[in-house]
Image (cartoon, rainbow over all chains, first blue to last red; front, side, top):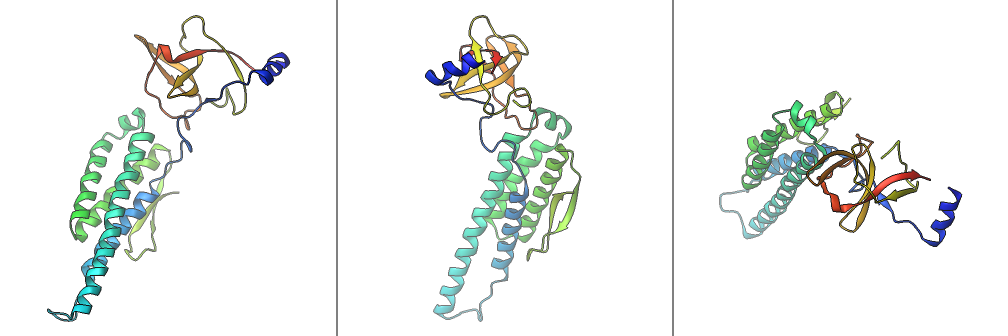
Length: 167
Length: 75
């Protein structure tokens, strides 16, 4: 051993990694849930916008248009974030044994992808709520694969919805 | 690869003979070296996995020619 360590001083060994990415094994559907809540919140806020009259003044129109643009931008970004986070867990974390146990997971992920697009394309509170429900279902399954029971916690967000967290 | 191999430990590999099931091998992929255990060998392809199943990342089966050598000594 000492001889090998001595030789290493003159011919340093290469590094061999045990993992292909860092941080390996760190997955959590929490970000996807927060993003789904944000989509719902932005949809709510766009829906609640009102003008003072059917023909508002130009200044008021500018303000409303600006507000809709900002809310829509955030809605778009977070719907995409939902898709990204779910795809990463689905593609990188889930293994064959999880799929065998949770046979609906592929269909659920597919539905989330489609539903997130619907929530992006429309100002539809029902669609945004359905997206959140699907992501919560995904979170339940995710924690089940880790042998953890989940609990529904009030998010405290303006959406007044829940978060699925491990107990 | 914990608990068999921990970060910072050094290994000596030999490249004669073909890897067998259960061997720990070092292989090269995209200019990086990796250490994994041989789980399955089929027609020139080797399926590898880590000993730490909770954290181990999954690799696609590797080609036999990617194998640098079998681990014969840890020091």
